[in-house]
Image 1 (tube, rainbow, N blue to C red):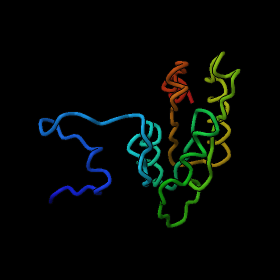
Image 2: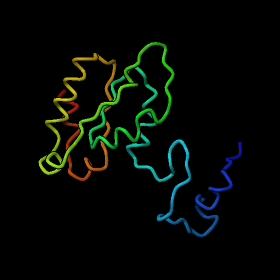
Image 3: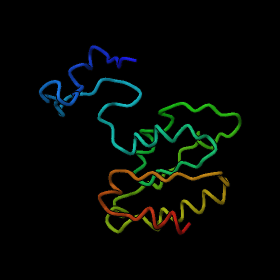
Image 4: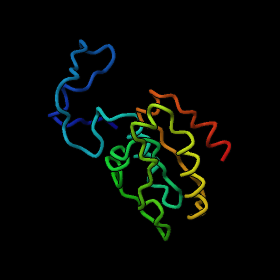
Length: 141
């Protein structure tokens, strides 16, 4: 099966060894389900979001949760938990002093309230910068 690209995106794709690398970063992306320049968090949310009976908690600013909420539809035979958008809503104070305690409280409250079959905690770009240890918090909870 041959890969097909939109004509408008042909000059935004680089195949190793075929042409000089002239992709530019400072221009607008073409609209689509997920922009070719979206962050890693956005990509993980798109991949995992269709798991409808799981809790999806975004550890980061509220804007990140809103940006990706319902970005990709999910078929469900009953569970609607994925339709709710949960975020730790990190603020400036959390960025300065860390958001691990806030994450722990949010995760415990949401698991207690919704009893999900699984829980996904998404790390946003700012969390990577401040260095919150999501793995340790999740293992503890």
